[in-house]
Image 1 (cartoon, rainbow, N blue to C red):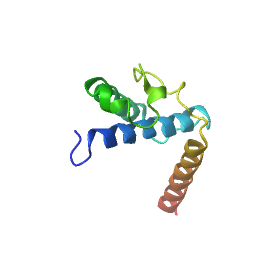
Image 2: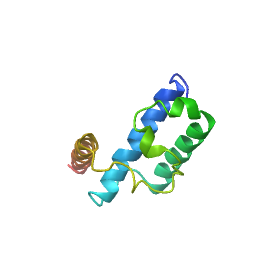
Image 3: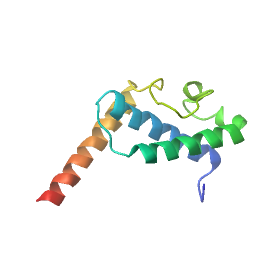
Image 4: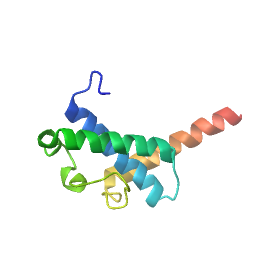
Length: 103
């Protein structure tokens, strides 16, 4: 599941993914990943946080993911400046890669 990443690194990666993709969904009314993929990431994050609560509590954005069950990203910090910039960057990347395939 984790390969070469530490538990803390994987928790951070999944949290950031949850925030950014929730920003894309709730703020920009769009999506880049499927609901199935998002749910898979959410379940993995929920499992890691429950299995390693002491590590999880020390990882960035812990306060937003306390008691998080993975069912929604609506209550995450989706208006965070970093999340907004990253979401816009990903949507632009998708647009460019889609237009290149259609050329």
